[in-house]
Image (cartoon, rainbow, N blue to C red):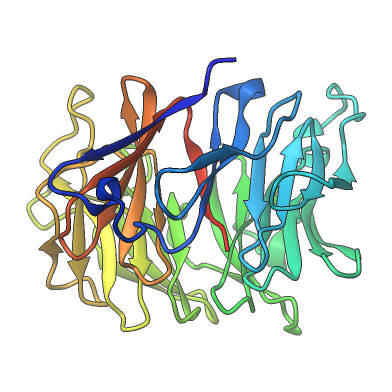
Length: 362
């Protein structure tokens, strides 16, 4: 069988990884590689070179999550959710919708398993199945905390038929960001399972799109839009307690040009890292070439960190903000690029087909 990717060790300058020096990654990296039914979970070791196929699912893997605590895997395949050990063995079934008739009314809302995500301590697995479930890994207790097609908070300006899916947990594990999809857009909310009123909607004037991440102190959510869509680009911060919004980089600059911002990260000291470009107009032939920048917590004092521009499909930040891993298009389909935030040399780690769903291992 043909390998789904080719490992490379290529430098844009003199990169240490090819010479056997210190590992470029602090943790192993898990990811999907392959298209549709051929997609499987792979692990790239911290050396940035050694890659191992973890799953061998007949129907391919549609989604997965890895526990930061012990490497336990949650795998979605054939509309079933399994837990497995870090090497993909010893599977146990958690949820099963494989036998549900796809022709039933509102099948998408009621019978699709998706978006597994472990809490930082690995104790709880959130996943989507007719809303949001919280599964206790130790006890096996499964709580269906939010059901689709309701109206979150009873707010009249939100469509009655909503569907909910888990996003990332806050770094301290106290809250879960969720997406709320409806007929003409989507927005975000925060679940605090221990609060008397567990849901806080992020308050915006329109849809909340498209990249989002927690600040390192778990107090706020960063949202950015790097795409040419009907939604305004830019960068915003939302208070996790109140949902209040602050615009950090306006989508429309004073001169009428557009500010595209993607994949933000805010560290414990408040420093912001994100990908940015200002364009007078969008050209389909050129696309949106983003540069890696650093700024103060309020978005001011922006500094470009690399001369290169990136066409990003996906990005994953190191927990300390020292680097970002980027998935970009390539002749082989996609490539995985390491971009340090200290101005160090860029490094290509992988080139292959359909690299996506990046996740840190323990």
